[in-house]
Length: 178
Image (cartoon, rainbow, N blue to C red; front, side, top):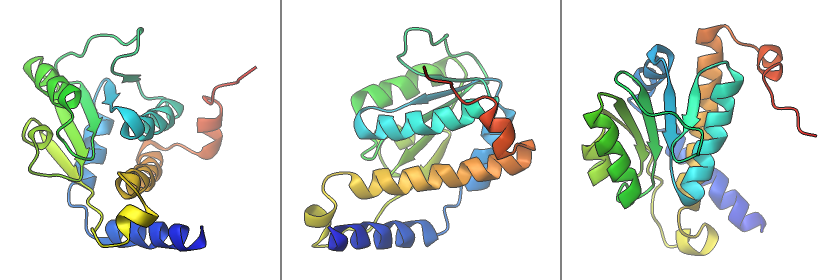
């Protein structure tokens, strides 16, 4: 296990040490949007949901696409879609539909030349290196998903600062489970 966790941590560090050019624009888009919608499927969807929870805890109007209580996406809303391949059909369809409604789309993907990237206003490119150990020590999308989770947690810290939020103010919006 230690070999795998060391490999994953080193890969995430290497991935996130690269300049992710669109970060400031991404943060500004979140702040300026009246509503933020988030979407992803599978493990990418779970990472997206974790980010959605943090945005809600900052007091933003945030919804996850596909939930029964999610309102319709309107003009000037922001839709954030997480997909490693950028070729997941439901992600591409979602991007195309909401763009027709006048929403802005940010895709977070490892493939900045994908159909999803082409349907997006902004692409956050998170692409871990490929090597011989990847499939053995971090199978399938592990490195993308873990790097994306850490990246989005870093975005949370930037948003907290820009929005004047603290851990205490977020805690007051934290769900109370019984």
